[in-house]
Image 1 (cartoon, one colour):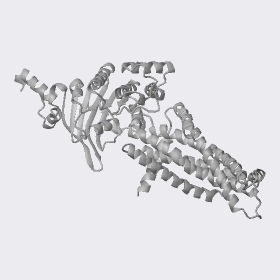
Image 2 (cartoon, rainbow over the protein chains, first blue to last red):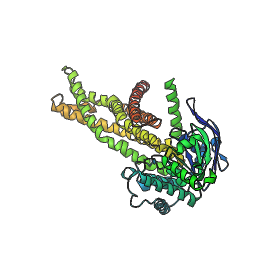
Image 3 (cartoon, chains in turn purple, red):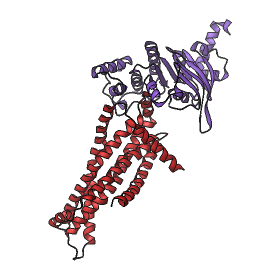
Image 4 (cartoon, rainbow over the protein chains, first blue to last red):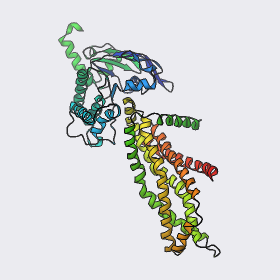
Length: 258
Length: 245
């Protein structure tokens, strides 16, 4: 479990995160949603330590990341996996080398064991026949899947995904969402996904945090989100007419809930 | 103020670069890759530039020594000493700052803007050390060899051009390049090349590592890196010449 307590972050006098406090649960896909520029990427990067917070605490199973020294942070980071928006695969390495990199760097496995783990991870994300290709030679969807394979290669306890399905067609986006959800359940890890895609929210949103202009506005799950009374969240969710129809239909079927 | 900010950030980056590596074997492999891409792949351009540089120097020395009281073998001597003392170290350093420096800035800068450096950090890798240390070792190790190659090809250039245009005979030229040879000049220039190699690897790496934005900013950072490296090479050339000669 990851606990965020009273986190503030500003850049050049501009407050980007204002008093964010929330819990991200183990074994669940936790979503951070919000409009572009709402501060969700800054929050995710603050949680993983790529941005230092101005004040507040970030607790990984009770261990305060913000007060850790460099050595302790390095140790904790080996328990993390992250999928970046653009994949962030190393251009100079093949798909296989990308996935093997964390193992080469931090594990004491033999060459055969590493190969087995690489094959397992690539198989887990359905990458076949592309082991020796470079990132520039594979599609965007495949790059995301390889990035997921790399992120889980050291069996992390915490998985972070920054807009994992941005730039992908709806079908591939759905596949990526399902893949992350399945991995979260299989490995029983704490997963945090940053997204503004309502399809993802309705597909895998087990625990959702909605932020707007750096402030925490709402928390709940995908069953509750359509019935929200929060004005800002309504504007965000029902910007897509499809979800208005879903809500109206839901209300017609359960009139007592209105 | 801006200078002090950059100087502080540069030295704090160097502190991270020279901290203990996670796994020595990974760095060791990378050093050889860097030696190939930054050093071996520069041999061609060093050879071409040096041949022309040596040839032109020979012509200019010969033109300035047309007076019959000067023996023609001094043309060879002039070319040799100019190459050893300044051209093959400083001028080659300036040219390599353009070739190797822009390569380092654009490579590290592209990794920064595509979040590959963040990705290394998240894994718990010291990205500064992993990306920059092998480049420093590779450039510092290979640069004295490039200097020696440059002197060699420069002398060959003079040997081709001098006799070809009738400025000096091959025998006089060969006599001249062996006349009054001072080995300390080579030591002095190798010390300079080690220093220049360090500057050529670290200053562009600094500009690449701290770039923010996209492709446009990476291009601008490359230009800044080359300009600043060239200035620092000239400053250190002046300081080292005063100290060592």
